[in-house]
View 1 (cartoon, rainbow, N blue to C red):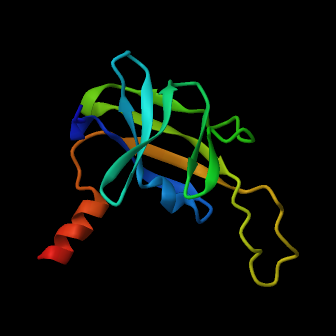
View 2: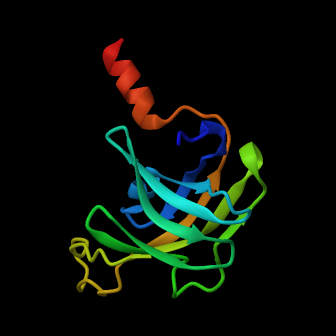
Length: 140
């Protein structure tokens, strides 16, 4: 079944540690059950299911780019997962956490071992996919 582009709730603004860029490949997509979503990542033009049965106020885990991710961040109760609206007006927000423990910045004492974390805002609607835009530009 093909997906309706305008119904993809795409991660638009992602704040936090460096892995935040990985989330910009992701989007929520509504299922046949009202208020329930699946999470996909678009990599190399292929939509890959990462997690299913997601609802506002819930929590879930998935694997992306070899790291384990949690939405919302279990250490950040002030930013729960919120998905609201429907169709091309749907939005989502919340916090994220993964288990990536990058090397410590130069001059720091060391890695805290807590992984990376941040927040996100996602929005449905018709926008140009950055991956597709790059491919179009390369072929022009």
